[in-house]
Image 1: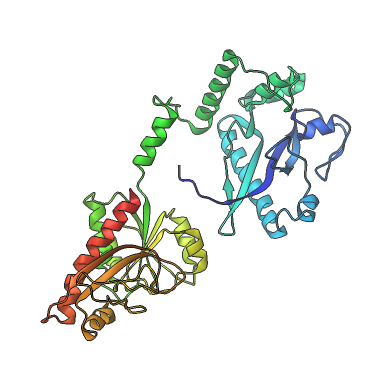
Image 2 (image 1 turned 60 degrees about the vertical axis):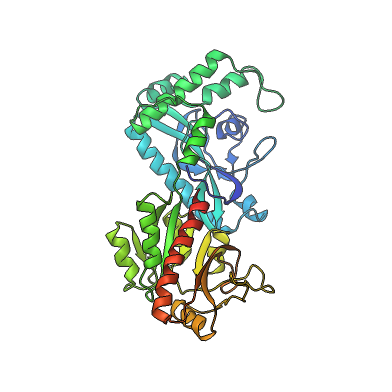
Length: 424
């Protein structure tokens, strides 16, 4: 599982298809006490417990860290400014669409999705579903085959969720306040079996019990997780840095996956290199935001390899300290303290210059060394925390071409070294 850090919206969107429930926020609990306007929705007289509603409804509640959740209405949410009207409308639409889809999937498995809870958050100001979806912890499931008969006889429907657990606690006087009664061993086993059963019914897969401990599994998965890299290129270069990264991955020197190569031009030679290696490519078109492409591909690390566009603030914020660039110059750790070459002379920064102009400048400035720097991309041009530098001694016979060729080899090596450390 890959986890993303988003801003949770403190609202639980509860979608319901039936008049049921035993908690304080359930609609049957209120309806049974005589309420007919619940969550701002008017209900008709004569409804029975566990009866199917004419259509799915949403009954939002607060997401409380302590104590009980509280009922909310749409008006409450907007009046309290918990979330904007635009975002809340998206939440309503998404919740109902997810509930309808879940209902269809469950019906094929012979199950009724009675009600469920959805939680949402904002990732780069974009609404996403968070936490869980259609699990026995967040949902109520009934057996479709026996529902009508149970309802006709006034019996509780056969269920495969934690409702029986709620009833067990309620029968012992516990409704969420204070110290809960200790679950018996038998109750724990019954709960586990129900969860395994519903998993198999919905997924059509047999549940395989993990043999190792949770800690061991986490350690194994973290150790064997390969970060997903996006390499950004333009049409000016030959794609040699990209090729070095691809080669390092294929030779298993770099524990990572090149998930996508993104270009701002269709004729970038790096796209050909990527396709030969079987790597997915994406050419930014119609002003599609770069961040959208990165999100769609589940990227962990962004690597610039000749990219000429400015990295915008939204992308920088989304990938803090995870966007790298290699610059054909020796970037100082502090703007007030220039780097020194191995012979003690001042190194050339080449701020604002691309590869060919930078190599030419090393020769024009009569520098004793050329060099490149791998750095974290920031909002400053060619400046950020330096993760690695390489130096190449300039010969008296050097031309732009000869120096370029040797420096490129050093660049490839230092870029891979930095990525190896970052990915491990």
